[in-house]
Image (cartoon, rainbow, N blue to C red; front, side, top):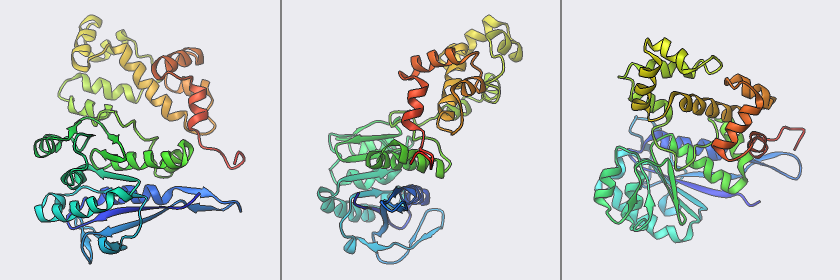
Amino acid sequence: MERKRVGILGYEGVMALDIAGPVDAFTTATLETSGGRREAFYEVVVIGLNAGLCRAESGIVFKPHTTIHQAGDLDTLIIPGGRGLRVPGVQRKAAAWIRSRAAGIRRVASVCTGIYALAATGLLDHRQATTHWRFAADVACRFPRIRVNPDAIYLKDGHFYTCAGVTSGIDLSLKLIEEDLGPRAALAVARELVVYLQRPGGQEQFSEPLQFQAESSDPLAEIVAWMQGHLRDRLSVDDLAERACLSPRHFSRRFKRVYGTTPGAFVEDLRLGRARDRLGLPNQSIAHVASSVGFASADSFRRAFERRFGIQPGMYRRHFRPRTERER
């Protein structure tokens, strides 16, 4: 397969992780050659909006490989976020260059507040897009022709991609790698970076742990945090209520009011989420995964997994588990 060139725009006041996350994800992706060697599939270049170094918001300094005047052909362009793109002059310069190049680039993506430059091109008009939840209302106000979704991790509309804040740039990069090389390659990159399979694009920006923390003012938050570390334990309503020093009836009512679901359904979702992560690990039987997260049997786990995700755990594993050296 032909090596693909990924350009990442660099500028003064960029968010460092919005550059570093995608750079590391794409440079980690490899293909096996006919001679059995593994070679990088992507050439990744940081493209300076101006000549010279780029100082990130955090003070980290990047040295771009080239500038917008000598960028060359690109397969994919990524516009990282940062307060620099909210400076009018910088935004106009970036938008003008993006607009001049977009038609010849297969994929154009913004990370976090990189959407300010992409939106200013007019290329997102009448398309759905997302950004960091804290800036979603401002983007919608400044660019009313864009259908802003404040909750999604990342979205695709045509050949334009947008994603939420900071670490979602890695999620989006994994998605783009999967489009090019398939799910096994994306999972191999995720494992190398010590992150799990990319989160689905439509997943809410507040992950479950973040939601628990946001609701930590409620005493039940301590129970929820404890549950996550004790999924193998007996987690019946009676047991949880006793731990919370409440009657089972009072505990159930209060839990549903705070978390919007029953304790039983909540526990099952926690167990299935943890099990899905473990199915990507090598040398883990279905029975072992089931017992490790608290299911009474492999059969009950299979039924719950298929009910929740629409696929048997064995099929899920075959689709996402990376091949071993012996299988290659």
